[in-house]
Length: 377
Image (cartoon, rainbow, N blue to C red; front, side, top):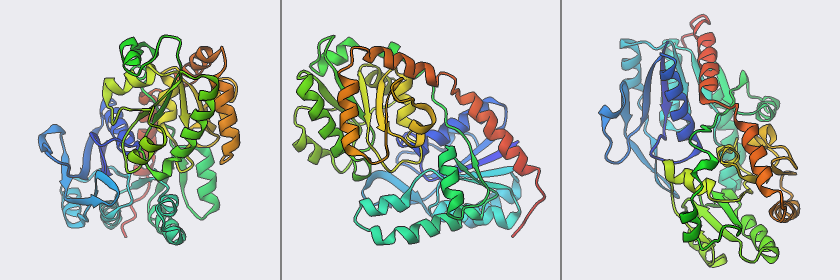
């Protein structure tokens, strides 16, 4: 098939949407499909880096340094897709570029799937504009209901959206590269750089340092654990607007900044316990990355945790929003002599989540859409 992917974020930008789109693109290419990418232009872009790449002008996203939303490109897309008509289009983001791509695909009668990746209705509340949440949710529903399918990563989210008026919602699971995220990346030198001996405890947080990640709970849970394990060290991987606030709260923590590729793998594998207190995820890719890296994990019981993490076997799955229980679980897991065995079990639980399998499922879903009668609108 000829498939076009449309996204307003893409690596080297680091976020769940960008990495998921890249994984789907690579997986489809590996299956022999022709895959074209339409995305927002980034700094120092090289258009020859990818075949069939269309770059679109963008504008900065407030409070998200380095990220840009794509500007509308409806005429360019109509011209492009008229000249070389794709069998199906996948739109990963709901910004201006995503909307223009959806309209162009509808106008030309090209089957189109959309991806529900980000709870923008939740984010606006965490940035002080909660009164906008109902409007934002209605905007998301209107966008996705114009497609032929809305793809979500969990059965739980599919049920939630269907109950709130979303139509044609289908689950497409997420994968994790268990060769890239592997306990073999553990690095004694990196742990020594963090100030840790072999038997000291490293507690890891990976993600954007921002209000929606609920990182104050990470600090509170770590401080409780530190009462029992005084030599424990908290390590933050990521960056964002709350970095300096977190530095003030926990000056003894390690702030490693953004990490990519092999360096990110080293940071995961060199830790012992992963804490993920976010309440705003559609999935939470970092949970799978931590589990694949052999880390016992404490997270709230939804998204990736609900799908893949078994309480007591791989760490702790805590009732959604119960902060006292999250702290108690951190203490319980972090003081276990069997912490290493929990991490081993966590890795075993996600080893079957191959990117190739997800790519095949994605291709089959798009092929089914392509087989539907054309619906120009």
